[in-house]
Length: 136
Image (tube, rainbow, N blue to C red; front, side):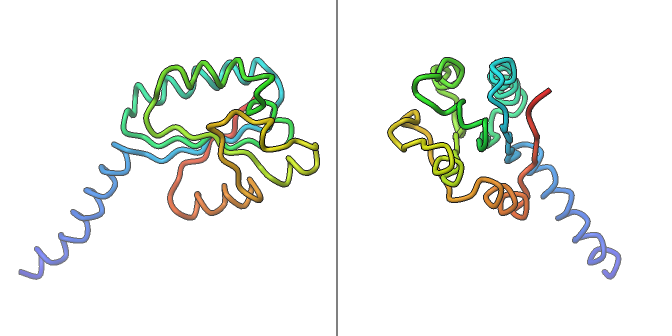
């Protein structure tokens, strides 16, 4: 009986790990205005959703990466949005918006914002999200 009780925590951990692998939560951190990086982001989101269809992806933009969320430069984000991918969100940094004089209405309508992008990334990592920094 003791052997079974010792085994139970390992079994629960293995099942939990399997669950996490089937639906990972992924942060894609964008801090670049480079359109080659933006084009690559489209491919990365598409590929991740093919490999992990139940994943949750949050593209978090700040600094020069906020350009990705601007309506007037929305070529690449529109490509992702047209795919109607489930559980893909786009987050902008309000601090960067203030610093760069970007107004909420300048962003694509489906973008959400947080006060500080880096703080949001830290909170998500504490909650078990995988972190991927984008760029070349």
